Image (cartoon, rainbow, N blue to C red):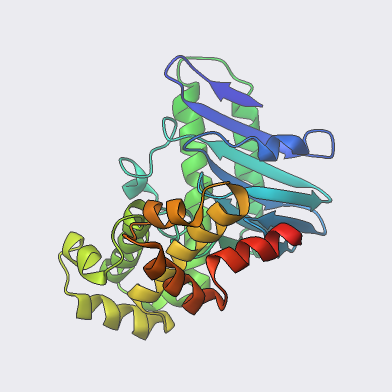
Length: 277
């Protein structure tokens, strides 16, 4: 079922099956996607990386991801665009930016355990019923139900990971850093730029990230650059020089050296290898 209005606000809610699973691949600009595995298995390949979801796991994707393949028993999908719910202007009510979506260097998967599955099922049922209503308050109700599902997911993520050990201010720094990296990794590769945006010192960021999950801010920036570089090499006909320029490298040698250090082979060798595979 699809909600769409004159303001180009878009929301799709769907029980997925073999007949309609092609809709999973129909990404549009600014779309965010939540896929909930309700069956015994779900195998999904995103940007040529395979993921296996067990029952009642949810995967969160943005417009920067490309779904290559999907197979499942039964599943549900929620998809919405920026006009319907904006991560920049409205996410202070939810807290999903930089955690569920725009995680910078990884795709977020959340496991819904038995203690909260009834909340998710009830939310889906109300959500589904509201999609069939047609009145002047429909959009507001649908937005409320979307926020509820996202908030439930954020709660699970906070309780089941390192996040529950952190103060809210620290979590907010991590969320904002992740989102900033998503927004600026094309041009800015240095931690100092992101630290200045957050009004923090590079050392403060490094200490927070290393103490929290043994990763450096620079490592996250580099990982995000590599995700984009691999995707451009895999899915486009841009030359290596053009890809290097897109990613803010002034010369192909610097980019190639960076890529080789991360991947073990040059960009040209990577393209040749994946073209043949």
